[in-house]
View 1: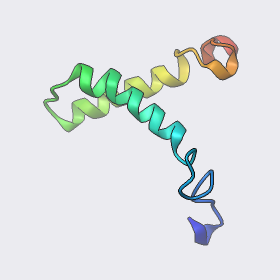
View 2: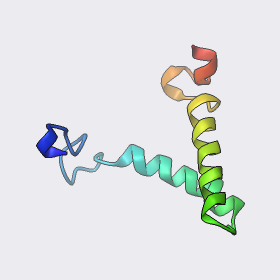
View 3: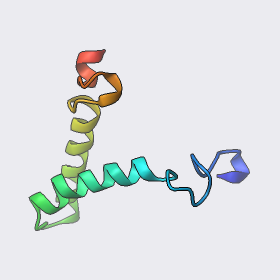
Length: 75
């Protein structure tokens, strides 16, 4: 990434906010999907549930940054 001129970090390396958003989203995903819907029978099942959750998160989940409405309603 560095060779292409892309920043490899959004904050200072090792800073407390470096990966906080990503870790928060991953934690939510693990709680709501991985731990709640398991045990898993196949990688394909995990992939399908991941796609469904990402779609929900990006379209139907209320987001605080846009007034706690869904992206569909904000559009």
